[in-house]
Image 1 (cartoon, rainbow, N blue to C red):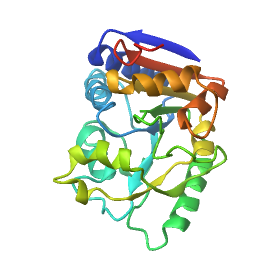
Image 2 (cartoon, rainbow, N blue to C red):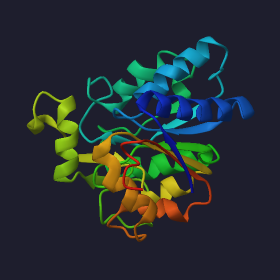
Image 3 (cartoon, rainbow, N blue to C red):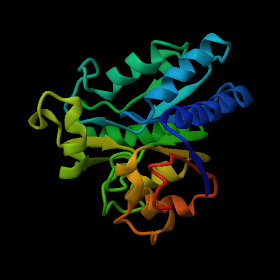
Length: 240
């Protein structure tokens, strides 16, 4: 596990964006695992700039970590909408190469199976981006999620709903379930980059890096992966 401590959010974003850019340059048809939320926004803005400078996404395949159950792709708070607004419409990734779970699928459990099969068919994920929740969840895998889990329907913890409520008009509008890549699905990625900023993530980062490897701290499983880089600002690293 490689830990990179930087000064602030902008430096974190630049460090991660350079890793993604290098991955694409080394392998133009890279399979990228992408995250949503506030943490990767700076990364996506920089990738837009890098694209203007020549980074080519035309052969890149993407798989997002998760999607809310019940939100259509055109809902302003869906993760498909987020990705279109913040990255896909800014670079030349092909629509058919960008994959996000279908939160309105008639059979969400079949959608989970289909999603894992799509990842396998693509050859697996070369570089997976992760954020981390204040309770150390990765993707939407809440504390207690078995490490052997594949893509699945998950119920969101109250703390996660509270954390995500800022994106909605009221907490009552936050969906209570999501489709999420499972921990086993995430761990199959060849390389993983986790990013975190702010003092509110310091406890989770400490537990992920130094705590016991336990399903009660989902991110602690990353200690078992052969190629993980954690990029944190000084506030998020304050307890390391």
